[in-house]
Image 1 (cartoon, rainbow, N blue to C red):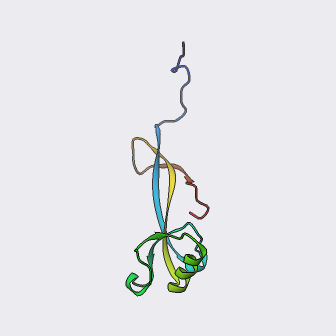
Image 2 (image 1 turned 90 degrees about the vertical axis):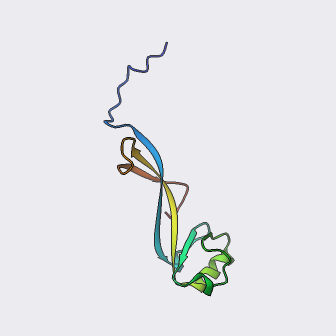
Image 3 (image 1 turned 45 degrees about the horizontal axis):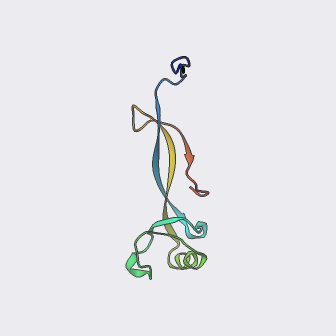
Amino acid sequence: MFNFMSKKSNRKYPVATRVVKTGRWIHSDQLEVGMYVSELEIAWEDTRFMFQGFVIGDHKQLRDVQAASQWVFVESEKLAKVSADSTNRLCGATHKASKWA
């Protein structure tokens, strides 16, 4: 029979995993295929893009964004360990399948 109570955890608080969304302004030269662009430094109406906010899918679209705007706001998601008794207490964070976040 298993005895689950035999090992005691060193943690004072239980830990849960949460998705933490982050965003930042970067120069368009730093853009890469796969990044999610949510804002441009110019109005969306002044561009040829159909939607406000999109994932850069290929190098042609990357060049189009770079030509349209010098600064862009990109968003990313990270997996973070959070104390289960508080939504604000981060215990450590790791990148979620992203090389640029």
